Image (cartoon, rainbow, N blue to C red; front, side, top):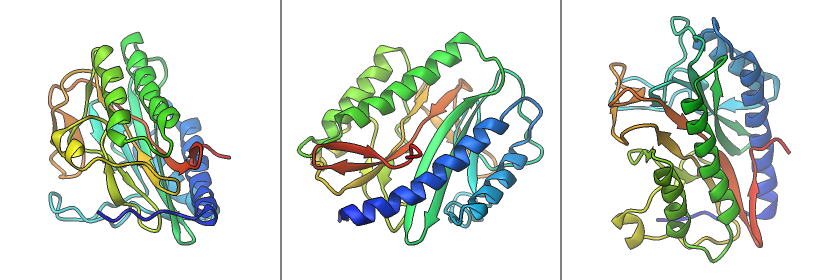
Length: 260
């Protein structure tokens, strides 16, 4: 495992990519409503990324399960779809659903990556609570990240908050380092495993991490859909996904995808 630490100048360049991601996601948030297709959201993302001078990271990413590369600028995953939903004009949003929108952008040499989950109209109190808890899990990580902390300490707090609220952490997908490439070392799980404890990560200033809790209302088990891309919960209960790109600073953390 080779972790590439970034200079302060490189982190500022990553913030520029992160700012584009934030602006794209906020634009898409404003468009989410019943009757809108995920295909329209995908086109709106392309237009906004181009307008802001960025390049979509996800388009062209290979996948051996699907046999074809990812075809869009965003992942748009509805209700029980955890990640990697492909935008389509046939996917129409309905009142009461939730949609997670994952966006990655390259600006210059550097990458930014973030995800929001948005309610479509009025949603149930139970799903609203799932959204709140997932955001709290990401906030726990942001608050705890600082040099000298081991990632297992943070992952344990994240997992505990999920499970104390009666939910489950998705264990098939994890966060990642990010920089010149979208996916860099290290892998950043939202839970504690034997593998993490054997290869724990001691945080140091200059590391940049894409932290992305995925929390299921029911079981943690997931499966691939028929297209080989979308990943769904096996029990068909909803899932929520939140993500920020976060730099480890000398005295804490710095969120690079919050629009600053």
